[in-house]
Image (cartoon, rainbow, N blue to C red; front, side):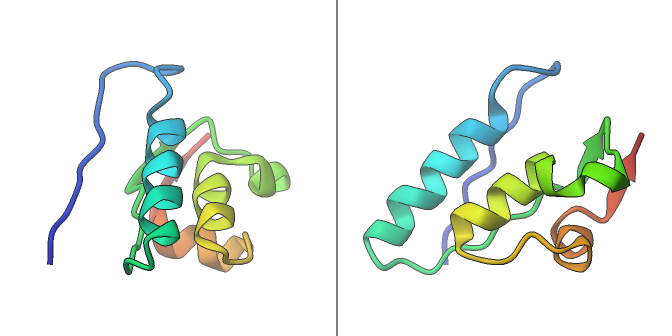
Length: 78
């Protein structure tokens, strides 16, 4: 098993975009892939389907439910 860790300082750097692209490439090669966004700031529960975690879930081919978002992003802050 191997892992990739996408990190950077600051908001708006496009970490989620890079992670989504990696997910897409791995899935297109039939590689197993999971995502974890341990900390998410600027989270609005009313718009959870627009969150970074939701974007990753959608790329994984999973439903972006509030419960699924909580599973890959356990620490969410407004």
